[in-house]
Image 1 (cartoon, rainbow, N blue to C red):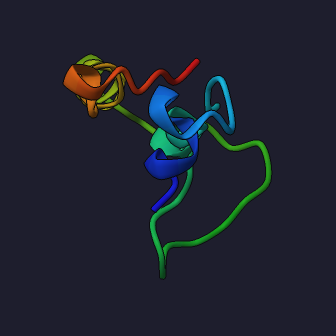
Image 2: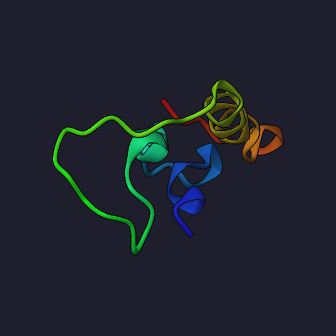
Length: 65
């Protein structure tokens, strides 16, 4: 698991970058793929994704950027 490398107790990495929000406007699997074509997304989807990563293992001092 990635989190194991970022936990302060393990003294390996300081933080992790995640790019899940980039997928909000990407076509879903099986959908037509057209380069640079706008895909609808909801603000709640963005908030959910960011919130999930900001809360992830927070009690263990996991830190993502």
